[in-house]
Length: 248
Image 1 (tube, helix red, strand yellow):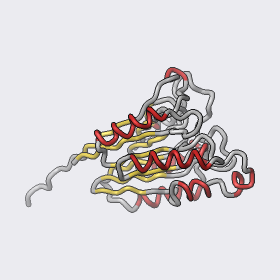
Image 2 (cartoon, one colour; image 1 turned 180 degrees about the horizontal axis):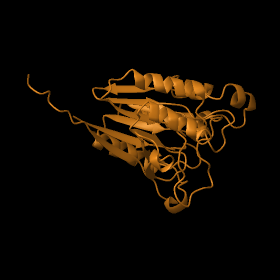
Image 3 (tube, helix red, strand yellow; image 1 turned 120 degrees about the horizontal axis):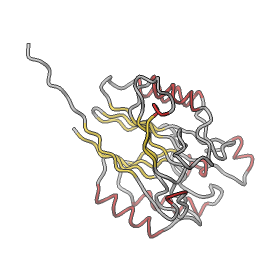
Image 4 (cartoon, one colour; image 1 turned 180 degrees about the vertical axis):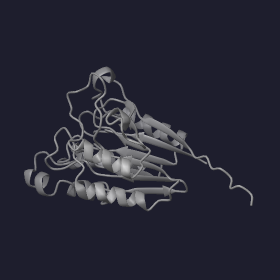
């Protein structure tokens, strides 16, 4: 059994948005026909402006379904201080989805999204205790032989030469959750730079370990570091191998 996941991130509708790339993304996504298309946050550049949400809604309607979506820090209002501090995801929930812990389950596969963006989030994200508990419980509901995939916006590891943005503030607690839930793959974005690594790079004593697959910006002009002026998304093929039960 095989599944294909298409992972895009950091779309940034607004001034950084490249509409020509958005058209290409839609065409390529339909040609690839993934089993699930994942967007790991930063749908808009400024959540305060309705026009940017309309742009991204049109893009989401054009993309193949099903979609699994999680918010990023740019999806939290910047200028409306009350909303930013006390109702940071109200606009996101209204314009994109009320569900900040979306789940996609198929035989042998479970993809669970979480929220690392908050009102006080500027650079580094934070996965609070409630979010960690919800994600762990959702993974715990799956059979033992399930391939487990987590989705967050913020990164756990800064690639070499890219330390200007700090990773998730409570990295060790997130590592504990991923390890205890036996998550096989973490998809994230935020840095506008692609990266593939493993949680074992952060804590070598982990027994399970989680592959980290980070996407650069998919449709904006804000690629960072070596990816300045470049864009990317990830295509992940998950192959599930089953051993036939021994005859009695």
